[in-house]
Amino acid sequence: MRKNGHVTFIKRRNLTHGVSVYSAGQYTVRSHDSVEMRCLKCKIEKLRREFPQVPLAETCDHANLHCLKCVIEVAEKKNKCSYSENKCSSPVTGPVLEDLKSRLKALLYTYESLTPELADASQECSGGVLSIALLNGDKMSIPFDPSMKIVDVCSRIKKIYNYDIKKQKLIYGEKELMLEKEDGSDTTLSDFGVKPNSTIHLIVLLFAIPEKMNEVTLDLYWGYPSRGRDYLDASVLVYQGKSEAGIVDYRHTSFPGITHSGDIMDDNAAQGHHVINVCLNKLPADTTSLFFTLSAWSSPTIGKFKHPSFSFFETSKPKLQLCEDKMKTAMDAQAIIMCVIVKKLICNTWTVITLGTQSGGNAKCYDRLHNTIKDKLLSYL
Image (tube, rainbow, N blue to C red; front, side, top):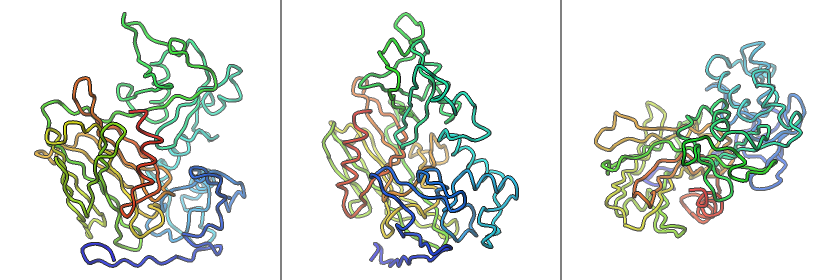
């Protein structure tokens, strides 16, 4: 039974080609983060992230078993869903089509809108490549040049992901790749000992919280599945350094400095909300990070929920949004770690960092979420 007396029954949907939403028949599992699917249109095995992650339209009542490339090719020719031969007449145009193209571009697979320099980096660059990995699992590659300026690396990233250079933080090993030296001159990859065919990690700093701003709010929300109301759970996992310090969720709605709204279901807008209020100056003094997660309650994954998102604002000014993010990445996991508010110990200030990191676990058992945080995230913050 769902909290607040609601009971939710989730049925398996039988879809075209004899596949159901939760069937594993089309999947080849290689590891927790590596899943391959065979596109039913081009018949090529591709990574799960090379497929659309949400229904292309409200009227699409089938699994996304055509890859992004096939979906885009059909949409550009017919302005329709690639399942049009199977009686799905949903339109795929405008923002939806552009979003699909952007997704494919970010994955750096061959497509006409990709810059050849990036798409063919591994073939053209005899000096190796440099991989840039995001904490949501996305990765891009550029030709490696030890004399390349760090600011130019950031410019390449901005071209693909549209993250402002000032909001990018690059990590190699345990070192932050600063843009400038003490004398103000530009730094290069060689200044930090970056080697060819290595990986640097990108951290996206959404908002630096001013020192005088003590009361802030995160609204974590999601769109209902196509068949109506269903729940995700927003939780806050509190850390002191690398140690777990507390949990705030719909059952445990308060912690020193943190309160949780519980379920706020807007049936008119077909959205669910969990609103978290944080009073930064009332947190325990040794608190260093607050991880905000959304996890599935009844479903095995959060894939059927539309655009899990968050918005951040000062509690006293709810209409003045300070930052936001909407997740467009693969949603095969049971949970997604949306963002973290982390303290800079040197100056005792807080920063909002977007994550989008997939994980197992949910509000019934947080062990796998804690493992993801400790194994994949803490070392980069």
